[in-house]
Length: 331
Image (tube, rainbow, N blue to C red):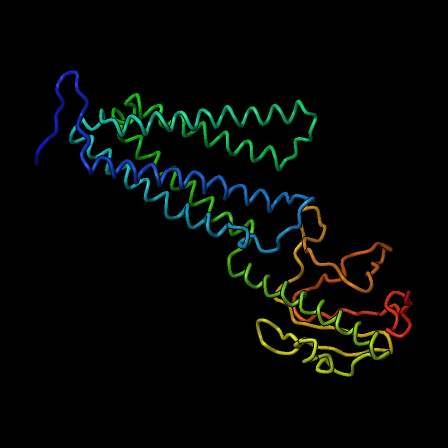
């Protein structure tokens, strides 16, 4: 096999193999770094939800699954390509001097250094503006700084030839990276739950949405006819286009029964109990229509909280809030 050499004062020639190896390695590297940081951000968002934004009960719908997939694929690709590159350098030391390697290292050092500086500026400006430094904000800042420092130190050592002189240590670095990535992905299943758990929770969310829709149709039925429907099928109306929803998982009809002239129950079977945020408040965006439920302490609670298994929701229509159509005042 031909060995490429360099003449004094001239740069090593870049072979197509060198170019695509470095482009592929850097592409996989930046993809994995961006995906890793965003994945950690999603965990932080889940543990410390923003009270000003509606909380999403299924974190996998917020992009977490895509970030997991990117990390799982991109990190091994980067490690394998870098192993091939280092093996090539060990055979032909001139591969250390090719311009594509120098550009890749210098550019990465620049980006990581700029990221550290920019993140510190954001942190200081937030502090000097008197804004609250929340745990959510500080954890994200810490994540970016730690990752940027590690990247900067690694590629600075590579530029100085440290890993070439200590090839065994780069092997340990690769193992450590693989362990950290695997631990981060696996820990996500304990933090936000598995995809299957998220899917089951999504079924429960749809059940609550369906029951809310049915509830409003019952109220509307009472306003129109001054009586509650005898059965759910009475709500179907081909003219308005309302079709009675069924359980999204079992395809069975929801349960309904009237307990008085103004009260009724809606029931469903749930996969799990209502999820709550870390501070114990409800994480469900939806809110009830007619009435609020009062707990034993006299405090209003979200009346769509449910337990695992069969759960019923008692509703009583307030005629003053929802008067019959013929009693609604007109201008």
